[in-house]
Every structure is written in C-alpha cells, then in structure tokens.
Length: 115
Image 1 (cartoon, rainbow, N blue to C red):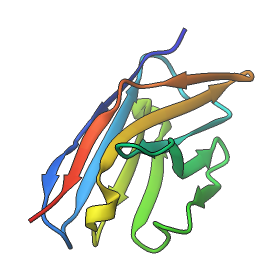
Image 2 (cartoon, one colour):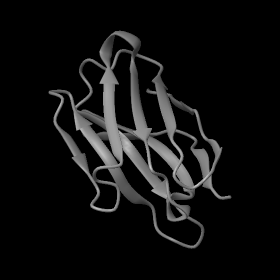
Image 3 (cartoon, rainbow, N blue to C red):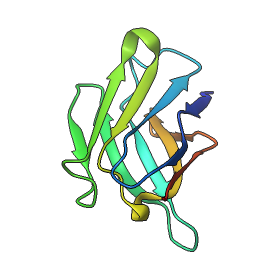
C-alpha cells in the first residue's frame, strides 16, 4: 500500500508561482511513474504532468512552459513547480503514482488563482 500526501496548495494571484509537494509513504525508487492531475469544479480530472522513474517528463499542452515536474528519490517526493499561474489553473491538484500496474492517489490540494 502507498500513501501520498500533497502540500503547498493555496491562494495565489494571477501571474504568481506555487510549488506543490507530494510525499510518499515508501521508497519511490521503483515507482513506474509519478505525476499530478487536477480537477476543476464541474470538470473531469485531467493530466497536468507525469515523470517516469527514468526521469522523462510529460506535460499537458495547457501548462507547457509554465510547469516543471521533478522527483527526488532520496526524499520519496515529487514536486510540481508552477509559474505564471492563471485563473483557469484553479483546481484541486492530485498526486499520482503508478506501481506494478496499481494506481495510487493523494487526497488533493486546492490551488486557487485569483486577485
């Protein structure tokens, strides 16, 4: 079993920056992939970014150039650095992990972009 705990969400003004963190309850060294999804009110959950255990990153077109995903195996953590935030980035952000064909999700962190 894997527990994922997000932190770093909050209220930020348009154009601002935010860094989300996701801490795993066990070593992530053998995780096939980790990443971030988000869900805005009334919308389906959508991919934001993923990163494989080899370090290959994939980004949604809507966030390319504004978001960077990284993982630190020594800290069992994955991060999402977001810059130039827009009101449409407002959503609950969920940490995700894939291990041996099993998906794991965090409880979510609210990110609100508003002036």
